[in-house]
Every structure is written in C-alpha cells, then in structure tokens.
Length: 173
Image (cartoon, rainbow, N blue to C red):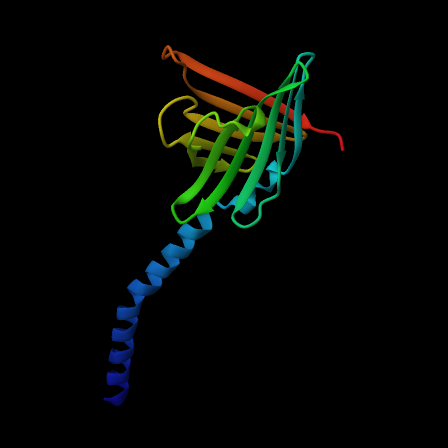
C-alpha cells in the first residue's frame, strides 16, 4: 500500500511539473531561433565602391555589446557629400537597424534616426523593414565572398517602385 501511495504522489508531482518543463523547453527553443547580432560578424570590415566620379566607403565594426556599428561616407568630386552612421542593435524588443545621415560639418539631415526592424536573417543575409514611413521601406545586406551587397527598396516619391543597389568590395588594407 505504501508503494502505491508513493507512486500516486510521484505521478501527481510529474503531472504538475510537466507544463512547467514544457514551457521552459519551448522558451529555450524560441531563444535558440531568435536573431542574434553575434551571427552578423560577416559585416565586419572595410568596404568600398569606387568609380571615376564617386567613392562610397562603409566600415563595420565586429559585433560587441549586442551591437554592430558602421560609418559611411559618400564622396563626389573629392568632396564629402553625405556621412552616415548605422547601428544594428539587439534589445528586448528585437533587433533593429538605426540609420542617421549627416551633411558637411555634421549637419543633421533628419532629426531622428530612421529605424528598421530585422525581418529575415539567414547565413550572410539580413533584411530589415522600416518601422515608420517613407523611403526606403526595406534595407537588405548580403555577403558573397569579398563582396558586400546593400540594397534599399520601397516606393519613390511618385509611388513607383524604387531600388538602389550598392555592391561593395573589400577595401585593400
């Protein structure tokens, strides 16, 4: 009789704990599939686009402190036309790309950063979607060997589809 009571108590305890264990396992599975900026180390490095009239440089730091950072400069005719600062940051609400443009003498092109939420992440590819309005509505990065592709997409001022592609190559050291 004593063994029967111990067995019933053990079964009751297992039944009570099963939902907690299942929830814990589900949480661990969700955490394992959540995007992680440490998986975006493939951004790191110095990237450049050069033509006869223009140079665009983009320099990405490796992931640290739940973030990556980049500085960019757009040079035309030997003069700085635009500077850009980018942070990809992971927080409790998700992973976001924050973008801010500056003119000469760090004059701000817009008060608040443009904010994009990570929508898709694969090996060597990420897609961010603008949380606000305006162009671009999507910001994609992908890497193939020594080429880093950046592409922005969305509706132009007239509403027609607009896409700008930036095929960077790894800058020589």
